[in-house]
Image (cartoon, rainbow, N blue to C red; front, top):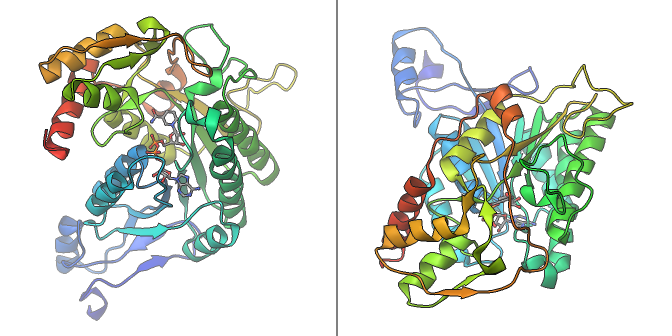
Length: 382
Ligand SMILES: NC(=O)c1ccc[n+]([C@@H]2O[C@H](COP(=O)([O-])OP(=O)(O)OC[C@H]3O[C@@H](n4cnc5c(N)ncnc54)[C@H](O)[C@@H]3O)[C@@H](O)[C@H]2O)c1
């Protein structure tokens, strides 16, 4: 009984990947189990321990929040770089740090020794790798940032997983890998060997590197190709943020390809649902995989790729109309030609993800934009 008297410790059990939290009434977020523990003999509650990289970023923050809300523990890593305002990253972190199950480490994942030390110390069962140098346009002017963050750091993540028998690595890829492809909707079963930006090339490289580790070391890996994610706490370099800021300050919106763009905008809560469900379902070899006709989306190794998008693309002009509606102000448009490295349309075939995890994006663009604008006005007091 003495053992139940206080919050004790996170204990890695003899089963290498299960983590058990033994707790009592003082255990944060576990009140109902703790109460039962007081009534009954020792109760062991199984939770999951995760590494979430890029945790101060847009998707990493929301993903960590969802894991913590269901009682899991999270170690978050981020280097808090200044690609966009680090104050926004710190504000996201401050919210996460309210949870007892969260611990933050600030360092660069391109640091091989530091990354190896963290993996060896924590023995994570699950890794959700979202840290990256994001953005297509920035890769035209800062190519080396993409090699350091997306290739060197990804190698360190793969090695950490391999050396410490991680159960499942889920990592961020991008719809950008579809490059010159025009067959819509984009499918993970299509060949994607024609990227049009270095950003896309590094994401495709991640998929290839993951396959090697899945094949050679039987490391289960799942790559998620995100399609234009938006929502509260979003990224300041992305269209919704830039357009909102411009309209509120009376500046014209720079609209590429003269507004003839379609994007499969995906609301953050839908994305998080897909990320968590994917991480929970460990990638397995595909018994039907045929090396004579290799399907790019699966493998004889424990390797999976999924699109994660809303699968209903929106015209950029409608997107802007929704922002105008939510703000109650009209936009002034500065129409520009297509940007190098950009693509005119994206649309995701998400049938595999829906079949395997029950992923069902449910947020209409009008609702998602209204929620973003409400957050933006509150956060920036405008
Ligand atoms: N948001 C989207 O629409 C979208 C679309 C496609 C793919 N993705 C991918 O999803 C992932 C998350 O994107 P996001 O929108 O949250 O971006 P984000 O920039 O908000 O988050 C990435 C975080 O990673 C951190 N980071 C970068 N390099 C690092 C390094 N070397 N070591 C430690 N931390 C580092 C950054 O400081 C940042 O906080 C990225 O891999 C991105 O490429 C996002």
